[in-house]
Length: 175
Image (cartoon, rainbow, N blue to C red):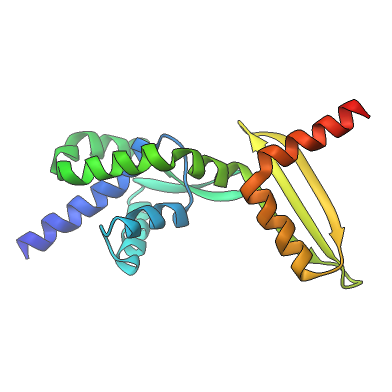
């Protein structure tokens, strides 16, 4: 029992540590991906911890760029500062390395959105957005005729948005 209590505390502190270390709000799926990829906690236990941390007001959901993100509260930060030494150094090293390697990708996921809907005529409306520092850089809506085209545009935007944005701006400015 004692060992599992220590593990429970360490795991919850690790979630708080990640949210503090990354220094930007992240989505539940990004947090989950980070924890699962490193084999720290299983999915269902992690979701339970997140719910408990929210109930205890250590973390909360916020909305950023039309996305639901997790943020560390002042109360969570205080608890973490008091008990951070209970997280094993090997885990904090892995977390720091992961954040360093993936931070730009995580930021891009939060600042780029792409999705599509179907209108009354069966056409697909693709919505591509780029947001930087809470400022809308571009919001482009494109009407296409097939699901395949809509998915392709969304994929291209996610993988190459910077180049696409620059080309559009050059075309508009130089025309």
